[in-house]
Image 1 (tube, one colour):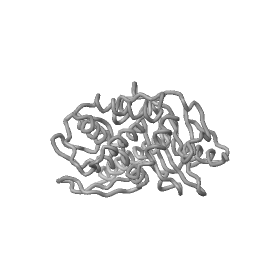
Image 2 (image 1 turned 45 degrees about the vertical axis):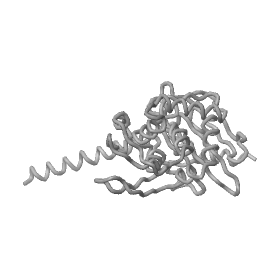
Image 3 (image 1 turned 30 degrees about the vertical axis):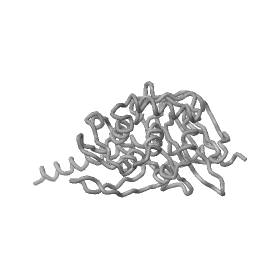
Image 4 (image 1 turned 90 degrees about the horizontal axis):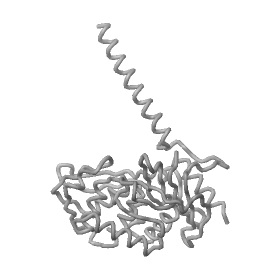
Length: 282
């Protein structure tokens, strides 16, 4: 019996150490919700910009036109193109190529069909790479290259002069490049679309799902929706190369600001700090 108690204690001790290590890693990556801005705090991101959401005027900026990987912020463009095509209740037939995307996956099954709108929610709220890829293959008539052409054409039409899309999800971040300013321009245009605006402002969404799952509940990765009053979007992102990325939109006292952060060691510190600095500009 003493040996059994000792063995159980050792298992508990190891589990506690593992949990502590994982929590420490989350803090190091800036992914916990406890971080917050302090007065006068500097911004650690490699590049950032904040603009007035109504006029487009630049309020705060640093290296805002430097081309950088943008990780899952890419899904803003993917979603906008899909939404503008319409027929959001139509089914999307999932190819094998979409199911092989790692690491953030919804668990789509090759050969099955899913409502287009459900894949949009999945892409924007929980950043599922397989959902974004399935949407892109569908919108590109079976070809990702054709979809990239649509993405880049849309970027040019919006005046995003330093952006090159080569991924529907942002997982490929060697040639999929943009700038903080270009992403702010895109976000301002995307938020003018009621469907896009409604999705990115939603903290929790429930939907029906094909069997055997039957239902899904998604909690938006943008923690500022829950922690910062006035936040109404937009998207988080992270890869090893891109670092932490965030687009946030916030309203205060009749004003609205869109902030974009690229290459941040802690988006939940840099995000509120950038927005505070932007609202201090008159």
